[in-house]
Length: 580
Image 1: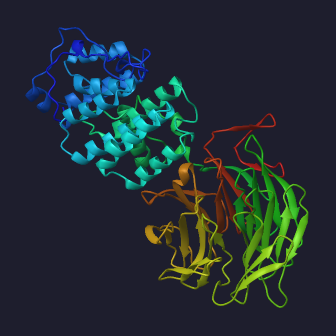
Image 2 (image 1 turned 45 degrees about the vertical axis):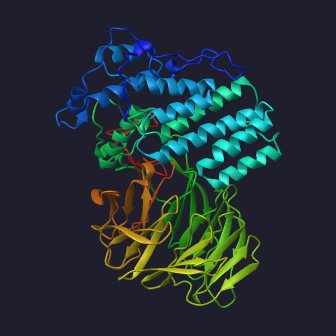
Image 3 (image 1 turned 180 degrees about the vertical axis):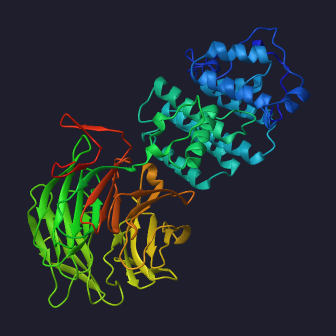
């Protein structure tokens, strides 16, 4: 295989040993990594049969490859006898005797022999031969240095490594070790144990270099199974559970019951329309803001119940935006064209009020390190403040509009704002750079994914546009179905691996799409007024919150037929004030 003729039965595969001082085999052999010695009776299948025979209903799986992959998996799992038996019964060896010898030479530190054997494998690509020779001789070089054989190491570098003309920069780096031979060479330790470890690592590196027909990639079967599971979960429109819950015994398919679609609680503490809400990064709190000028911090208990922790008063105008600090210990709140307030989550105390004379603040957000905050201003500028309220910087010009949303990119170096009706600005606040995302429709709001690489934009015509902003901005998906004509309606990412997009809607429902397929999979009814905002718990894929003009917040969870609350049966809906 791979150009190697191997007519010798596995029983003649030699476990190379050596009496030289460099021999570190110490019982370590290729049999631990792959083929074991088999009986002399083993016979190989004719080449034509090996090449042509296929299995499976589609006729695309080569039997030889399948058997070799299974054998590799058995050896990797520690079932050496079973792997050897498979080779014997099938007549299909995992590797040729030449490859076995090559691997054993690596483990025994027989570098010159291993390089010679490498050339005997008859690899078609000379570059692969040179690359493999380079990493083998590099190991030889380090072990010579580790054995205080500096002149021999220098000779290897000059006569064997340098002429390969592979990676000149690395050759120069190796020369530095000649000057300073006491530098850490082999995994930070010395002696036999370190060398054996580094030689095993070398084998793994060589395995990646050599063609898979010559050496089956390590854990190839496991990789194929994982790949199959990934494809199944990607195709599953309702997958919202951890991989650990999946089984290899059946094809994977989740039901709608894995999506939070049942109202578990109704929170009624606001006295006016609820405009905005957002879970904390750790999922332990929920903040909501309302036309009643109040902000409420809710606590998510261990059992999933949501209870009121603090009712924050101080704003003179309705509050339309909140932002959690990176550590979730503090909260920013922004009144409509008013002030930004910073609150202590534990005590509910207002720590500072940020304001500008004669101007109102329209948005707020935290710097990545939590040491400063940003806010949009009614004169379309953006201000940067320290925690104590000192204005550090103000960027004038068309930097923002009166849209309340403000985001920060993953590296913390760019601010994301709506600078014009149809334009998103990515502003490099350190470099003053500007990048723009142009839409055809007026932008209503936007939301960032948890990794801050995806931007979800809500437009006037009711569409949601998904942009990848990791590098050059690119439109990757559109979502349709929800209703929006008059009000600000917000959307969010959520679920396991943020595989879903959720949005409020003016028809009193919550809409949920499967993000990769763009398919609308659920609509959640329950509110009696427009749903203004939704937020998915970032640490609990089975918890979703929605805020509505009906003055309530609904907590959605997995479907339940009945819940037993305080020893009484109920419909499963619980109000924050104890009513059911």
